[in-house]
Length: 202
Image (cartoon, rainbow, N blue to C red; front, side, top):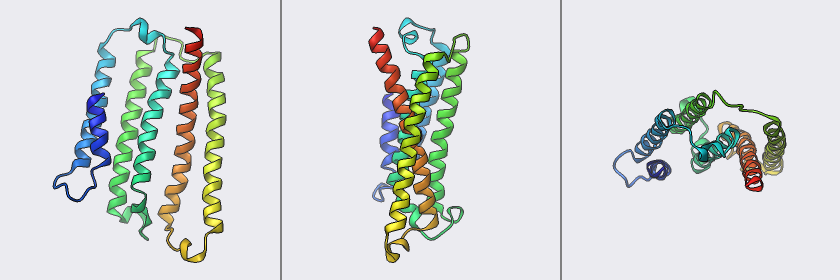
């Protein structure tokens, strides 16, 4: 966890021009390396009573909160990169950010699949899980809709000069952030609902 935290700190500070070496890539390497270390531990560490007290759905929800939160933060920090009037494929800076985000999604997917394999002999979804998934999904949809409406209002009520500052890649990035915000909110509400039920049962 310490290595992952250091990696994230370097990941977000990697574009400072006064640092003469690729700090961002070092941060990415540390974060992904820490994730793979956790994957290895998940394979080797035996099941415990403490682990069993937390439902698989809650584990997945908290992991989703962490990874999607990092992706959103990365997208917001580097939003200006997408203001250039260039397709993303012809914008090397935007391509570099896309690679970072892609790396995070791959690490999240691998960790989620390894956890599913670890819980292969358990019931992963029951009526409570479905109820939490339904409630969290509704909150996530409202969050996504709110962001999309916000983007529409900004575009609809901005004057012509300001609209010229919004390139098509930047608008696409805003729409992707709306989807990511809904996904993050979905995961957060699910994690909170699981946590609340667990505390009530304790």
